Length: 189
Image (cartoon, rainbow, N blue to C red; front, side, top):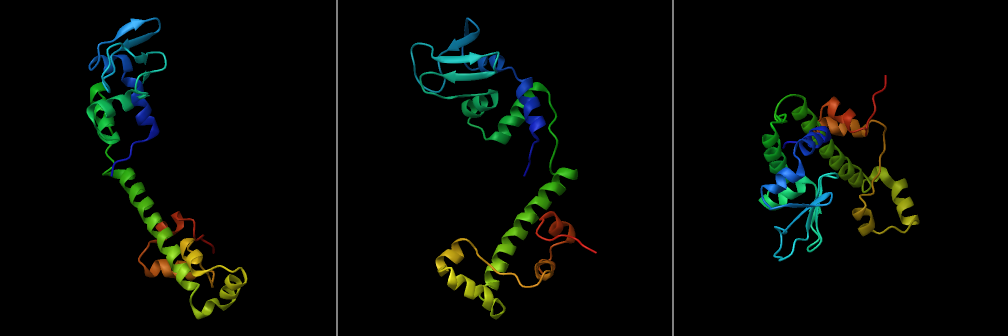
């Protein structure tokens, strides 16, 4: 999975003038500050497709489609976001960082593990609510008149000891770095 930073996306967008890019697909004519042409996304006889070089956006007054250069290329070429960025980066000579190596890959893996930790934690505490250790919590649930469907829908759970989650996560094979990154457990002396 490749993720690009907002800075890279901005650089790609700013390096590809919208008028230049759209001119490769649509015949544009200047009218005042903007350019107009026939919309490539629907059939029309009079130009309703407007491109603003000042704002670096396009808009069709006929079909309502609009956006920036990334949106245009994605729609006209039928590409996903990642492929569109790669195409525009290549067009403007920008080298994209590879997330498969280095810090980006480590950050992505850590983020995935944190999601798994959160998922495990919700299930773990929810299962705890149905154990004999949770008598006090079960009484509270009855008092609040929460039915089983509500308990399951919101994954309502119960925790006993301060370190039980840490021990359960370690038992599942999560590292200290991953556990601390989840912010569900904090480190103390």
